[in-house]
Length: 392
Image 1 (cartoon, helix red, strand yellow):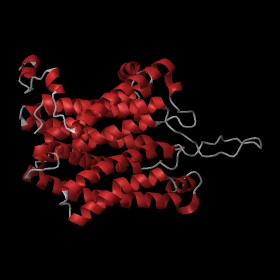
Image 2 (tube, one colour; image 1 turned 180 degrees about the vertical axis):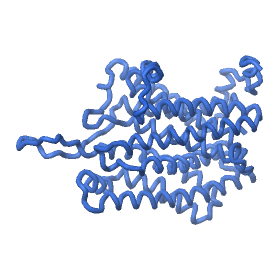
Image 3 (cartoon, helix red, strand yellow; image 1 turned 90 degrees about the horizontal axis):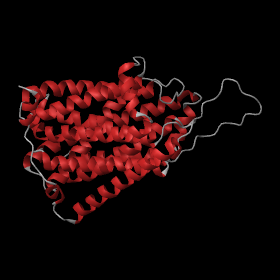
Image 4 (tube, helix red, strand yellow; image 1 turned 30 degrees about the horizontal axis):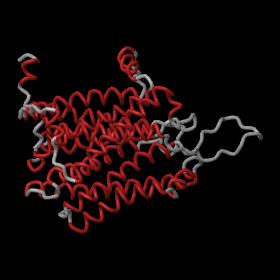
């Protein structure tokens, strides 16, 4: 079958712009529509500011070169990998209770990684040049080169898997789904390796982050599954959906418990022994409000709701997932910022050198606008997808 003929066999709903705009005018839907329009407008302003001023539009410095856009990019790609894992439970691993979420989760994984690419494109500086030289002069020893290459392959496999899911060709969907999952996990653990390879930053150096990223991706994917189904059914879940979400809640309880275990021992090993540039940074992190926002919103609240109802309170889990995604954002922001808290010292010092202080950073308006624009783009693409494709 030729490619053109194959494309024509993909089931797509023909919708006009009027049909896309013809949504139910409830207060919540109107609010979401307004949020999308405002966020996309802010995205345009932020991009325009960046194109005029370059990286001077951002509050990043030599001491703090990674800023909000890196954190938001990680937020989106972690979400994508998590949704890929959730979607693979049904069509790849054959768990029948999860087949109904496969298409919606895989489409969500495509949308979120596209939003992540849209944000990071204005952090890289020359994204077109990057693509060209990524192919012409590959850096096989660079973790960031592997990250970009693997995520590009991952997106390709996710799109192909989604097409076969739409065509109900489960055999081919399983093949490309498994391939995409393996490539996605490799890309995501490699993203953790970008932090783990930082020998000069002892707070992040080591094997913790490559495994931590996979764990938190799965947790993020389950949070998003509850949110997507909450909006899909307006919190009036069907019997099959309730059963599936209850099972996901139980898995989530286990994953969050493991995450709490991981983070506790990470902090203990960082503080123990008083190692310079690690123990002092860990203590500073423990005293920060954003760290406790991450812990309370993404771990404590969801786990309490799961344990209290044994995972059966799916409506409560919807709200806990909303809280969890806010906590996940703080988790990504903390990851990027905390790595750069302690300024790097020169090997040679003199009596005239000031005692180093903590590196301060707060995102600029351009960074905030581009980040919010990425969220607006994600919501818009997902909404259009619900109109164009049959995701149920």
